[in-house]
Image (cartoon, rainbow, N blue to C red; front, side, top):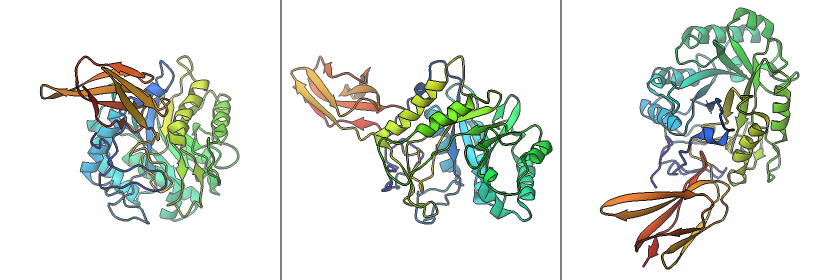
Length: 391
């Protein structure tokens, strides 16, 4: 199974639970984890700040400004069923702007699995306050002026009810920012705020257009991970029916390489934390009550142990045995498996037959060499058995 993600094959993985760039990842449509009949736009949170070098301790072996990488990134998103990108943006003088300006025209070449164009949205990161002068209010207004000119009228920009969606990551925790005045200056913008960055919550901030869920790490690495914050978020979201709800799922969190965080964790639980996040959504939303947006946290924050680019480790082991013309399949756990595939080689060509994930016996008609592939649920690492010889 060759590497099949946009990650560099030279990336060896990290001890914070991040898989290597050589991983073969499931390309089952991510929407399949959501409730039946969902119309949710699934978006990845993207950090375009890697420059191809050893940036403060992590080298992912690619540059977000390289068109070869950018095209591989967009193609990877489409292959997994993702609908768009949320760009963590830190000001017009920041590398995040330089790199996205290169990506912006290229995203127009990509169409999602549903037939729509990939879209993108700007997330105003509170670090932009370090890249402008003046008061915090003037800094935010300067940032808005820039993105209004360069991004918000783009045909690929993310819209909701005909208005561009702009995220706020932590600005509500900064002093001296008047969201009523900012909204008055940009009445056509839907501002979606980070939830629980400060009091009041993201839905209750003045003139709030909505709120988004983010990973909530703890000082202890416990399993199973505590996802009660998701229940709290979706419960409050239901109390604000006129505002945008942007759900969130993540595989885990480990800030081993993020010294600015201190050590914090959300245990990956061998893919269960990821799957449990979707289970939470499906408890609160359905085809009659749609979740408009889902943010995958994150595509490429290698520092905090959240990157989904290289996939999610299910810790799966698989032991196939043979009895006559029957292959017996034993999985350590089937909960992270979408389906099984039996592969064989004949007449100079590979072929496969698909079976349900809970299959335990597979009958074959012919002697030969076979391989069993456990195809993971969306974003989860695929696992291939050793050669199985049938005499």
